[in-house]
Length: 202
Image (cartoon, one colour):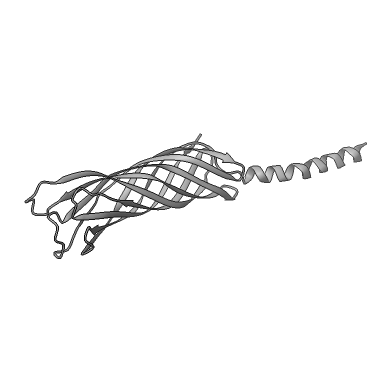
């Protein structure tokens, strides 16, 4: 009888092992909120293609979203509010009236999808709508500033790490392309960002 019980216990252990492994490799799910911070590169192209301007700055903000776990994969929606102090000026060859551009507040809402790589680590991609608060200016102050909230598209990818308890961390690269800047002589703006984040999952 003891042998039968022991064999049954061993069999139950083997049967449970795949289920445990599946749980350990489960993709993240539920509500999440967090903060992000990192590097931003800003590039602005003149509308006629005659000149470019660039600047490096810090970017930081808050994020929130919801993921639906599908076993080892997940899909979700997220939003982000961030800001930076990027400011750049075109060279003297630029023929526009306002040679400077500031990039400030950024707003993002989009979708993401990913999968578990190992227990506690997931990879994902993301894409969605973004908007950028910009100000076109002259360094001499001879013309009034032009403020505009420019529409754009963002895409990116990242890695997400489960930490003890409800904590999680991530590293992420994303690129955003913005059109229709306030000054028509300034054509398009692009931001490249590399950020790290930490947050809670509920």
